[in-house]
Length: 328
Image (cartoon, rainbow, N blue to C red; front, side, top):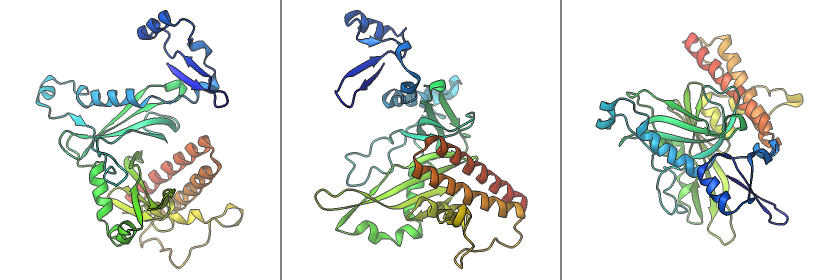
């Protein structure tokens, strides 16, 4: 069942999502006419449905055990998963660390032909910190409620959220900026650590906010952390952090030249290493263009365009990795 609230007069409307649901039928027997049938849901309203977080939490908890179909493995618990603890729940604003909550993101994963608005969660191996799986539930009308599970090999050593968080905080760039976090006049707040499948790997993104210790103050974005393939980026902007991870010059897309063209190289922009191929150079250029597309889409607030921009960036990163393999 879904509920809407009129922002002007507070009118509440209830809609059935599954007209055959037995619990809903019992409620309709007691309160006839209160819940509108599924046919009353307009396409515009359905486009704004979000898959419920509480149901998803139950489903991911069940998946930690019941993805195992071998009886021996099931009773040995060797291949069970677990929901990791929240690596960013240690700040002064967090009441408890607890489990890492699921996050709503716009992303495209294997098996999806375009980016979808979905609820996602990382899962680690039981009593270990390495990543074991990534699960999502789609909120798209055509795939509403469809679960997608990306499983990693059982013998993998892909770092999980807590390992990545520790790696991020221990990098020289972060430790050298301890004054940012230890200033008695402000409080540093680590934002949500997002895990996104990108180009056959996993991209971690985490914002850091600064809030002054004053009444009526509010958090302001101070830094962005990015981790991909063991590399960590730490910058004042997402583009800057991505540049540190994917190569020098990628962040120049945030300062486009006139007529949408890329700016000329600066003295701080390092040339490609000797032996680099034209394909590698073109891939770097494509990443810059894709990052500029992402920036423009974020500013416009066009989610469809933002999804296409992320797909463009994903394709460019794949070409970059392929070029690295052929050029090395």
